[in-house]
Image (cartoon, rainbow, N blue to C red):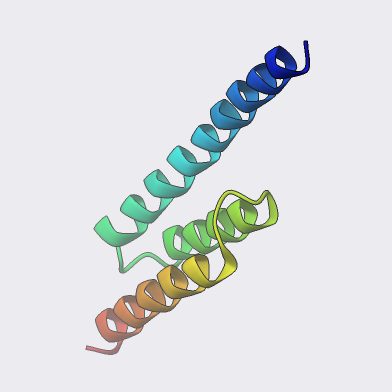
Length: 79
């Protein structure tokens, strides 16, 4: 019985994590495609923070992605 319950829990957790991961990736792609738009960049950063709070992404991974995104945004808006 416990093994079956663990399997059910893992499937549910994997599904929820996939939803959050997909949402985060799509927000990052939108931000990179329209790097001039501040709203999309803020949306991507928010999605990364939510993924960290839900335990889907490691905080250092999200920090690295946010840093690279902001670097591209700042370079694009500066020029």
